[in-house]
Length: 241
Image 1 (cartoon, rainbow, N blue to C red):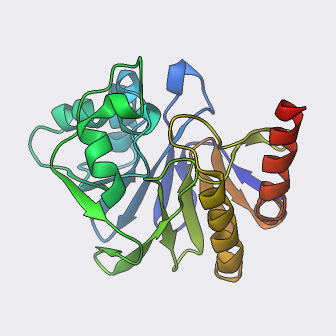
Image 2 (cartoon, rainbow, N blue to C red):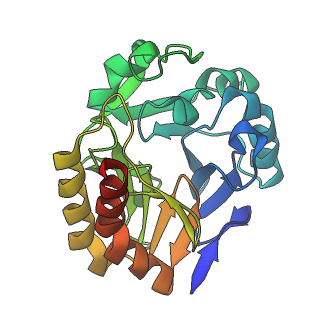
C-alpha cells in the first residue's frame, strides 16, 4: 500500500507541491508535469500560497512554468493564477481549462460566492479527447463532471496516472475522506457517469493524483476506485437520515 504525500518527484515526469490551503499542510496538492524542458502545472491553490509554491518550483528546477491547467473553477484551484503570473514576469503562462469553465473563470462569483477571486481571462478552452503535448509526453483530457459541470481530469498514459482534481473524492489519509458534492454546481447523475468512466479506465492506471490530497498507488489506488461510489452514497444517506 502506497500513499505519496510528501513534496517532490514521484514518477518519471511528475512532482507534487503542497499548496497548503489555509496554511494547512497536506490539504491541497499542486502538481507539475515536466518533459524535456516543457512544464505544465495543475491548479494553483490560494493566492496566499503563490510565493511559497513559486519558491518550490525553483527549488525543484521547474522554473519557468509554460502551461497551467485548471481542473475546475473553484477558488482553491484558481485563486493563485494572477499572483503566479506576476511572480513569473519574464515569460507568459498559457492557462487552460474546460470549455465549460471559460465563463465561470471570467465571472468567478458564480462559483465562489463570498470569496475574493479575480477573473481569469485569456483561457484556452479544452474538451474531452484533447491532447496536450509536452515535447512528446501526451496528456489526454477527460470530462469528469459532477463536482462541477466544468471539471476535467488529465490522463498520463505513459506513467499510468490520472489527475482527478476534486472529481472523485477527497482523501487525506486512509481513514479520513470527504465527499465531492458541494454547491453551487453539483450534479449527481454526472458524478455517477464520472465514476463509471474512471472504472472503465482502471486497467490503464496504477495511480490516482488527488487535489485533496496526494498520490495513491497499489492497493490504495484500487480501494479508491472500488469504494468511491459507496462512500458517496453512505455520506449522502447519513445526511438525509
